[in-house]
Image (cartoon, rainbow, N blue to C red):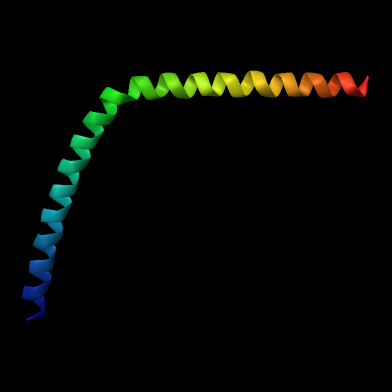
Length: 65
């Protein structure tokens, strides 16, 4: 009885995995189309953070003098 049950859950798991991979493929396709925009936004934010931190450290070194 247990072996039958194991087989059933195994096939169900396989089906779920198949469904999941299909959803993942669909999601990744959506992500690829949106990725270029996200990367642009992220890099702009990152550049702003860098310049902001540079300004802070320059002010601090000025105070020490």
